[in-house]
Amino acid sequence: MKFLPLIFANLLRKKVRTALTIGSFAVALFLFGLLATIRVAFSQGVDVAGADRLMVINKVSIIQPLPLPYRDRILRIPGVKQVTWANWFGGVYVDEKNFFPQFAVDADTYRDMYPEFVIPDDQWKAFREDRAGAIAGKLTADKYHWKIGDRIPIRGTFLSGVFEFNLHGIYRGTRPQDDTTQFWFHWDYLNEKMPASYKNMIGWYTLRIENPDQAVRVTRAIDETFANSPYETRTMTEKAMAASFAKQMGNIEFVLLSIGAVVFFTLLLVTGNTMAIAVRERTGELAVLKTVGFPDWAVLMLVLAESVLVALLGGGLGIALAKALTLRGDPTNGLLPVFYLPPQPIAAGVAAALLVGVVAGFLPAFSAMRLRVVEALRRV
Amino acid sequence: MRIGGGDGDGLIKVRNLDKKYVRGSEEIHVLQGLNLDVDKGDFLAFMGPSGSGKTTLLNLLGGLDVPSAGSITVAGDEITRLSGGKLTAWRARHVGFVFQMYNLIPVLTAFRNVELPLLLTGLGKAERRKHVETALGVVGLGDRQQHYPRQLSGGQQQRVAIARAIVADATFLLCDEPTGDLDRRSADEILNLIDLLVRDHGKTVLMVTHDPRAAERAQQVLHLEKGVLVEGAPSALRA
Ligand SMILES: Nc1ncnc2c1ncn2[C@@H]1O[C@H](COP(=O)(O)OP(=O)(O)O)[C@@H](O)[C@H]1O
Ligand SMILES: [Mg+2]
Image (cartoon, rainbow over all chains, first blue to last red):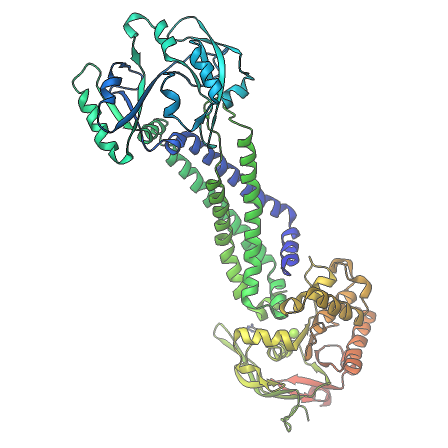
């Protein structure tokens, strides 16, 4: 592209100004990247949810338990293929600030329910054979430098005492957005330690249905089955569950969109203004280009190219920095287990930067194109 | 016969050229039925008081502006009938401009400044380089290709501007007070260069100047008076 030296020369003419404009794009796109990452973190459950999985929780709230005997009744409902269950165990590993989710899971059925989590067969076997066995997600295991065979002490919160688990396996996710921070141990083991009034109570059921299209019917059938019992249920798809979780975090989507919109609008004004100044102070030179025969469209493209180049350089830099940051993992010590910037928001961010570059550059480029040579030359 | 409307097979034919500017309610009638004939290889100087319309005339001849009435024909093309884009393309092919203030792009080297008109042609990189080097050689700046305008003297900058005007092998050169901003010595160098272009390279040059010594170099001096061109000494001096 033979016009490139001219475009670069123009960009380098006011180095500080160009650097500042590129910097604005970089900051904006870095912020955009982080916001997108946080959005993914909050909504990851929604994205990773299995279409054919339902969750059954206590109608009052997820922290209220359900009786274990419901399992057989759920299994009898037409369309239900598999059932598993788990309990939340909010224990503490060494220090309060070491947060990762701990689930007491049913060793017979849990693994089959979540094929997105991969564990070598021998590790799973070893886990099943040890009542005090545990499995950890890769991210958590790496974070605390756990190796298979380690003893992991977890201090109970609603149960007193320290529970020692033997780590038999480490699971991985099959997709980047899979949550690999969880820590699993035997529900039987937890049940044993529970006080009598809480025995045989579980936190939630997860079930697989034969056909996602039947989700509504099955959901209704389950909730009707347990209506008017001491433990009424609320059944929903995994996606709906994750979405309602995300909602509890406040309307994060709206907040992120608002911030993003303000940032991009500001960027538009900053860049538009910069380009307008650049064109104004170059009036004479643009007139010279036209004098030597640069057609109007070429002048338009020159100015536009400059604005777009700044946008792409700055935007690319910002989003690359955001990506680099996410590659270093969750900075919040476990609050955002999935700290991942997917390719779609990267592409969207670059596209947005490009759009800002084009829009911001357009008016100045257009006025450069419309410049009347004779008058511009008279002014120099 | 240069200003009376001759037989009409010259390079440039100007007929009844009129140019009015409207500024607010005021109308300035700068050119009033001006005629001119230029042959290939001519070197003409235009003189006249400030504001007499010399720049206006050059702008019209170079297709930078359009007249209010009348016609300009260059090598058979009636450029006063060409519209925007076509006029620009015609200008790129046929006209080389040299201004008083050199008008180089300050962020480009001499080489890149001279290369500018060639970017619009289909020439490849190597060919462009050859042309630029030739043009800079002609103006005696073969060794200053990588210098930026601010690293060159006024006279040298003007020579770069002349190289830019000739690099695409323009049909004719329009020079608007090319020595107006230069000291005597640099001015003489520029005039020698223009002489050389006319004599050895067969260029056609139309030059506006205030400087009688510059005008002396031309084959003919025409004065712009009351909107038309007259030959010889200005009427004020003759009277
Ligand atoms: N774009 C314009 N609008 C209005 N008046 C103009 C314009 N260009 C030139 N003029 C007027 O036309 C006259 C001739 O200008 P010009 O051609 O620049 O004269 P010269 O080059 O001989 O000094 C001047 O009075 C000038 O003010
Ligand atoms: Mg003038």
